Length: 266
Length: 282
Ligand SMILES: Nc1ncnc2c1ncn2[C@@H]1O[C@H](COP(=O)(O)OP(=O)(O)OP(=O)(O)O)[C@@H](O)[C@H]1O
Ligand SMILES: [Mg+2]
Image 1 (cartoon, each protein chain N blue to C red):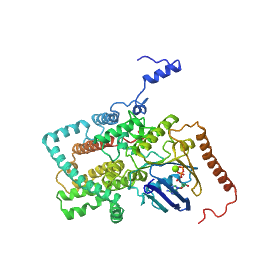
Image 2: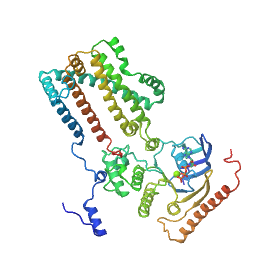
Image 3: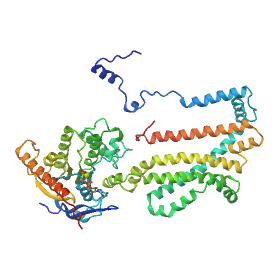
Image 4: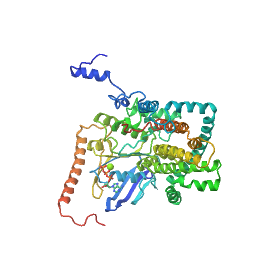
């Protein structure tokens, strides 16, 4: 295996400094993600998952430690990255198709075809000329997904992309994502709150703990795709992830009920 | 029309289907807009006004009747006075407005885009803005004489500030979250401007446009009343000196009509360009 093409996160720490003081959000994150790997990240709300993704995307350069892609420090304008934000973040003045194309010109035949195909793929047929204000939250999120997919990014960073979708649409979008991933050998890092989703998609599930956000454990999922959610192996791994999360919650509560002693450290 | 009897849930469904409307229309259901509702009030006022004058309750030199005003309007139009004055006024206001609003737009955009430019220019602009621009008129007349330039510059000065302020604010109100999107999608500088800043700033820019047009009229009237021998403002002033109250009214009507016309134009522009917005419509 080529050891060059990979995403490396080394000793990453992030502290937000505000008028209320310093808030240590991420501490000592270390990870290596080879090109083409599918990783999901799961952890309690506020543990710094979105913050981590933004740093990986190069949108936030104020941190300690290094994040490198193929040996180069990540930059927002660097290698093709797809980022699906926790909110849809569509441009309100552009229609669905214009949002998907964004800075690509719909006048190009190639772009046009890709956009049309993508609209169909995310089940948005008939809404090409609609403005975002006329879409539901789940529809808008699917448009945002289409906008990221159409660029065939090398690295795809997704922040709870399917959170606003119903079970069926969600399952469909997961399939679409797996197709895109398998075809393009994209590196995918997907944040989710849904344990099933984390286990069904990933080759490795990163379980995070909060305050400060650290990697609690990494659970490898060595199951062939497509996966059956009812198989014993799947349920076994699912239970393991769940146990890790629960154990963290228990510890967190224990800390809260214990008397406070020097908060935050450093 | 047949009354609709609603008996069962199924009927309700049918009724719903039959009366199904586009989302846009839903907001207006149950509140039909009367045609020309905006003209009702002026018409009522006109009728009362005419009645008061016909009954000779006021002296015509104080308040001429609408009919007399109409006659004066017609005579002034036929003799060509009104048209030539109007033409001169329009040229002045359009030129002054384009000059001021154009500069305001460009300066405001630069101040919005570049922090350093803002630091240099904005404090001075804010200081000058607080001087009522009509108070500068004598200075302009001293410097530029009574010719066209002093009038154009006066109008331009008025139009500059609202355009500057609103363009600046518009650009600064662009959502930082959308900037992140633009960075991830690798927008270049030009795309960042045309696809992000411009559309996001547009509501504010159009507001600035509307305010600038209003201020331009104000500047025009002042310029024409203070030192001019032509234009609608002069027409009004001159009529006052000869106690031609009806002509004064003709001038006012001209201003009202053109003011309304230009405002409608900007509103049309807003409706066109801001279709994507989702706003409370009352
Ligand atoms: N711009 C900011 N300034 C200050 N603090 C911030 C900022 N952004 C995030 N935080 C803090 O960092 C912590 C982690 O936030 P983050 O959004 O990364 O959490 P998350 O894991 O994505 O949570 P969720 O699952 O609810 O989306 C939170 O405590 C939040 O208050
Ligand atoms: Mg988050």
